[in-house]
Length: 309
Ligand code: NAP
Image (cartoon, rainbow, N blue to C red):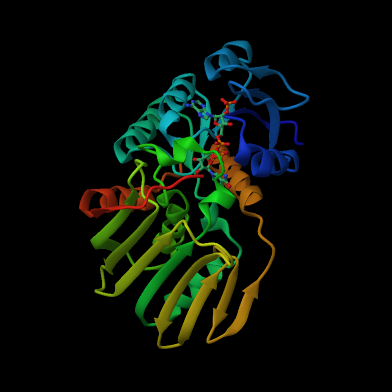
């Protein structure tokens, strides 16, 4: 750790904090994890508080906070932190609405602190290689297939099925964070969202986009896929068929793997957070969130079979 390490408080101690934030921060010399705030979750070896307000009151030396609770409950915590002049790292999706995150960006600017709307999948190992390939190629069409088993990846997460939890768009927004980085700008032309009759969020979605250059892009999201899981983006191009698979970790052109390395998404997210804090800037790209909002706005709703855990 460097002597000018950024003193970090972490808020909403649950699955993603334990799986990714704690190991990434522990290895990052730019950060010193100084406190945590969560109603039930605790982090060993540092002071723990029940709320962000209690943490900020007791720990005036904190420079930054990472907000890792579900998106519906993030805005108030972010606002409290920004008004206390703390830099803020937002887990994905950065909020439950587009306009609340725009407001947070304005608050960060007003208070002279950095806001980071993190998109972990954008830092998957083969994403930059895919972007470079597509920059040189002429694309004719693209397809996103994001199909996983909600029972395996999101057990007991009630928030994800509630309004603002996004349902299958919670993983789907990871795909959107990649395609908005590697494809030309695009917009939704039609969408069908399948809502289980007992849930307030979709379990599947079929979305059609058109890029600014007129290319068709389809997106299939499915949360009931058992067996092999698919997190793939496919593009047909004049330089061959590109398959970015494994959530952005592996790149193949015409069936030959050209890029495959272990993922380091969260270490890279914290590297980027330190960079913007030191540079006095923010990094807030709302394009993935806007597409989800548009899908809910334009999409036809189908009621499908009830879902039970
Ligand atoms: P989680 O474990 O269900 O929730 C994280 C923590 O948030 C909970 O342990 C809980 O801690 C707190 N929380 C829950 N409801 C709350 C409420 N109503 N008000 C305030 N705090 C509340 O979820 P997660 O999987 O870590 O996901 C959190 C965020 O990270 C989501 O936006 C998700 O999309 C994103 N993410 C998740 C993953 C993943 O693999 N799970 C991957 C990447 C990103 P307390 O009860 O202690 O307050």
